[in-house]
Image (cartoon, rainbow, N blue to C red; front, side):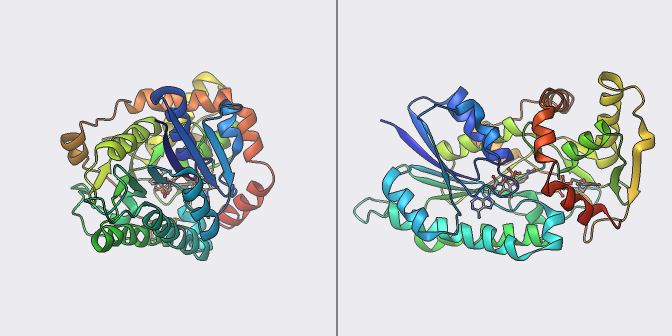
Length: 356
Ligand code: NAD
Ligand code: TYD
């Protein structure tokens, strides 16, 4: 029997990698209903490889739209919901928090409510259609910032600092509340910084690569010694599949790659790669320290032991391998990069970096 996934935000960075991975590599006899509003971050070109594939049903709509969401549940009867749709960029949330609350909080509760209504089956022992699962894709940023020592576990108290992370924490609490109150079978996954193909160049790695290719300054916030824990996107997507199929309802799972790097290390690695493979004149001289991000979290680091022990997940991509794969992908898809950095991107760039 065909298993239906309702994936939201499936035209964005992680969502498109997830949909492609499911349909092209990992699963048979499935259908993916991909609900995406196509904001600046959503891009149907990411899904070009699925053209003509009837197992992929794309619906351009807003996760806050109750009627559309309810109609999709009614028509397609999804077994799994994976909620990637979100406003995802911290710098944008500092400029304009409202849309983060609307989509990340309001949209998530709309989806939770629709799932509850569509899946309720009082005669079933658990009160819901057997096998269903709602997975809320969250972030380690809800835990706040670490000092030099220690890692985030699933029990670390929530302490978000940016409007983005606060909106994600609110969504997590609502997802948890739907489990605690209604026993809706929910999981929350909290991952570290992802990298890989199709990431919008507002985020560190593709932004720095794009600037290096254009011989533009590389804007490092503050001293550049902030630490992020980098996770290759395909490793993340595999973890999500495992949680959907084998996670215990109501549980949170942290997903991290054991790949802590300072921002400067990342930027230097990108410059060295470009100098070696593209353009010898590029060097560290392009690094420009600019005014720090407001409320900038110093360090993120995930303890992923729970998902390893409970579900057997381990990251498979070493950073050295993943970063080369990622940079090579961008170099081979410079038309994609040029497309997404034209038009509105230029005014975004001016707004965020113009006065720094
Ligand atoms: P992204 O910004 O690349 O993509 C977001 C997608 O959601 C886009 O396709 C956009 O069109 C869609 N979207 C936005 N608002 C919508 C709405 N109201 N209705 C329907 N669709 C809407 O984001 P991403 O980096 O792929 O992140 C996906 C999820 O993973 C997010 O929930 C994010 O918080 C979480 N996350 C991301 C990272 C990371 O490193 N990128 C790390 C941890 C968690
Ligand atoms: P980002 O990719 O925005 O992810 P997040 O804020 O969710 O961790 O940023 C990663 C790190 O890189 C973060 O510490 C901020 C820093 N950064 C810069 O120094 N300069 C930049 O232009 C950007 C986009 C990020």
